Image (cartoon, rainbow, N blue to C red; front, side, top):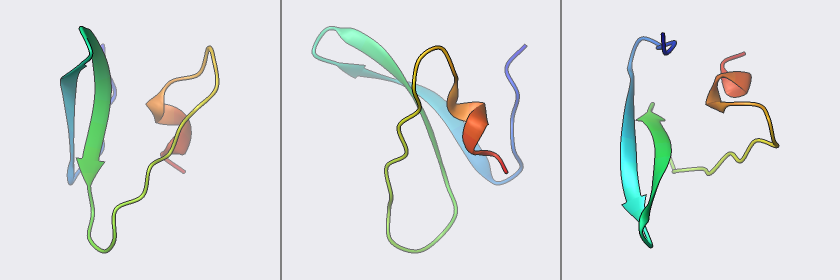
Length: 46
């Protein structure tokens, strides 16, 4: 099961022949958060 956050959308984005998981949402200027291995995007939910 994939965790979700209200107001955010999770999607798989094709990049150079691979699929990257992206979570988008919120307002204001965009920011890019990169987690280390083996964590997931869920590390940024706090």
